[in-house]
Length: 353
Image (cartoon, rainbow, N blue to C red; front, side, top):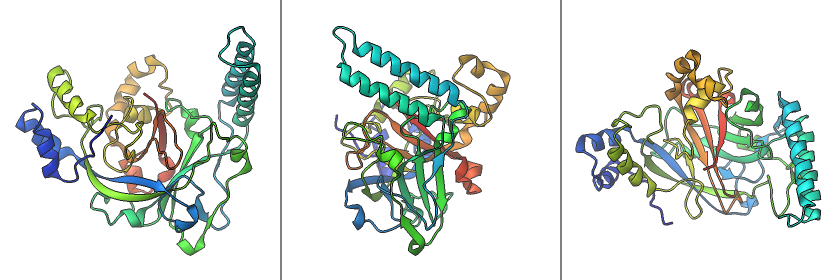
């Protein structure tokens, strides 16, 4: 499917929306709400050619000299998680021995061993996979850079790619780290990938990604109907909603091949609903994987402030870095935490359609 790029100015955005049947007032409102962002395009690169501290997806992180590779502790609910993985290990092994199984017995043995290894890792400290780093000084010269973010230093993203922690339980929050670092480039070290990560990676599946150089371009991102700030028209207006969603579809989603899927700032292109509301509930200690939680008075009151969560960065499928489909990753934070530079409070959410 061929997709369009987001417009890079308000006139182009307005002209595009005027091709729909939406009213002039609605179009003006949508144009006024659009957020500037920076599109992050990647290219195949030799990591040795990427300067220390420069923006990249994948590869090896450039950390302050003497800093250890970021790890997560054992999950707070490790007993439950590990038991689930061990049950899956035994199920796969048993299924591989059945007549007409989709697995050979040898594959069953391998899958079983992988799940048991994951169960063991859940119960102990383990290194996080490196997704990439963003040079904020470089991005800050772009017109699409949101001045609420710091204009110097860099952000580094680490994530438990092996476990893919869910977004709806408080216990999963140990499964990522977003680091804000202002160390001068001459005090950085390109850190070697831990053997624990290379040991679980092979040609068929890997949590070690290739370094891909980033180039930038400013864009305007329209507000999605599932954003908590939505007020362009009633979402019960099916005709207008269908028209707007059809218009949005031309820009694609970050789980697609053949498009630039990474973005800094702006509105996200989510694959599921509830990104902001889920973050709001979980950070207040609520497990919102249970439907009854959403109906409580506490949850309803908390959701009133869910619009304070905004996108920091979106990462999607990338052939140059080797990030496969399906799905995409969203780094989100509350406005007040961005202002306070509390990037330790950021959340990385994986969504898959």
